[in-house]
Length: 135
Image (tube, rainbow, N blue to C red; front, side, top):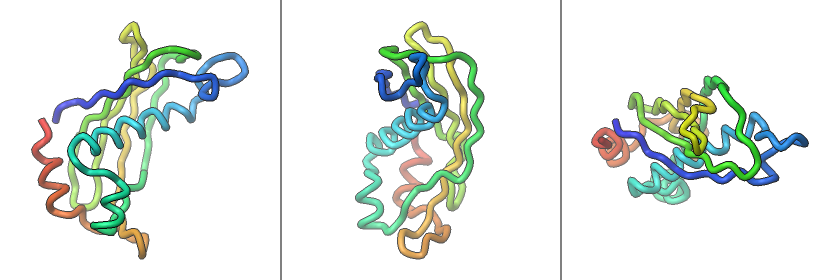
């Protein structure tokens, strides 16, 4: 499946006292890329919660950090669907700096849950069908 990219500017609030992006903030940048990918495909997360009664939650993250990002850097966060399962999606993601150096790579597994029972449920057919045709 094709790769979706989302630009990210590093702000002061994203950094530690040394001006280096705090490690947990990379997860926020990756989240934005996944969310905007779904939005571009026509799936807004708040609407899915209201209309389909589902939430997508992070079940597992494996991340490797390669190089730091710094305040005011322009980054690109990417998201690519690696695998669609009945009730989860496996994403391959990365963040690059303006020199196209890879700063981190991650595998993120999100699970689909019912927003009332908070238990796993199948991804609704219209959603899975659209995601299966991303190229």
